[in-house]
Image (tube, rainbow, N blue to C red; front, side, top):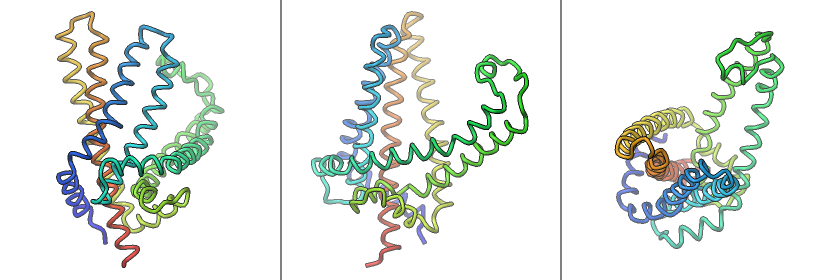
Length: 270
């Protein structure tokens, strides 16, 4: 049986032992790209012509983040991997990883359609809801079934998310494509509900830390910059968001990598 406490202990040991490499990868692939995106978004608020550039930057940031997750996982799962080798592995495996991500996004979109269609057929008006107005002629039965479907889908997504915890580790270490999904499901057998608990706890802590950090920094910068410092406040909040996201991404990658190794030891004993 896999102990989450043991996985966490191994993860903290890896972070302590390989902090320099992990920090540099996170800086280059997570922090700096997100910071650049925050700067572009800040400029786009006053220059509408920059919005296409902002969309392109968002795509590049997503690619950098994917490469970063692969590189971090490579370092977390193999003590012999240095920074150069980690980026080489990320470059070699980013194609299969992107293919898997696209398949998962398409599957999620298709899964949402029945609920969205039911709510739409019920006569639900998003604009009226945003304005706080009543929904005239709303078919409550269809709306209720649509909402129930989406709620159940949320639980299903959480379960699938837990089953995919070791996915990046599989892609990095086992050279699999779409088969990595099936392999990930197999590795999490018997640990799914524990992983769901970890994901919920991780999400809560991340949201609390992010909200606290951005609120404190945003308020401090707003007081210092004055009424005309909206752009500065936006950039400062983006800076803090990038930092917090990078830290938690490292934690996620290392924990997932260590879970992958532990699950592989259990499922594939030498």
